[in-house]
Length: 421
Image (cartoon, rainbow, N blue to C red; front, side, top):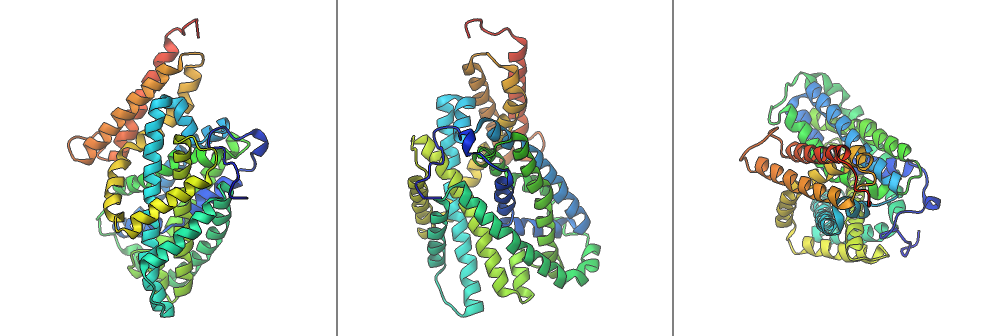
């Protein structure tokens, strides 16, 4: 796909350009093969023990798959990206805020991911090949490659996923095979209890809440909405827990913080480095793609690649300038307002459109904005320990915004439509 390919930043994807749902499977499953997931799985199994940890991972994956299936279905049914859907759901002014939040968040996470790659890969290169390379240089070179690949659009992400999944699968098989003998002893370990079962579930769902929101960016290229939802379920309900559990077992058996360090300890230094690079590559590419798509729509650009290039430069400057750590703290705070968007998308898919067919769009848009604001406030109150409904900020934001949007949608069903509409 040429760099100037139209990724339909300003319009729905035409039916003739839509295809198989395999694209979504490879993109979504591939993004689960990242270092953050490896770290989280090791943390969950270490905290809860093998049996409870596996139960928490499976429960989280099933809930994540259910939520993402709705947003994926919505993207395929409309052919619209998240940015275009935000205009329909939140109105023109609300959509500007949504696109800005999504764009700023994802471009920032791109910079954070390449920074993490550089700081992790540079010592590994020194240890394995005696190559003393600056972490910033590694980040820069990787960032350039990621920008070039992302200019290929969603098909480029699909290709990366097709490479990452088998490579990580081989690493998982090697890690489990070499630590299988230690599993009985590891299973007897009850866990450190540094994390509760609910906390583990929240951490897993929270780690992918942005992925739930941006599913339409990928599923809009799929011809069948049901197939798009099915592909996401296969990736998140089946592949995701397998990847998490299989990556956590070697870490638990060896007492290592993640799969990559466990593979290094087992003598698989070069495969571990390859897993690290590819997993960070697809994570950063997905962030850069959706972030650039949001900004392109915000600024009414019709070609994606200039925004990919610009976003890549901004993310690289954040990393090279040493601003990543401070910016990540800002992104974590910004993340409080993201879960309500997922809830609003899902409720609008299930209830909003059927209930309000033929009604003025402005009423639905005002309800969506109100639900978003209240959900964000609920998440913030929980995050800062003021008050909480569930003790989990992500769930508080989801619950409050979903309730408000549901009530508003059902109210629309019960009240007569404007005959002029």
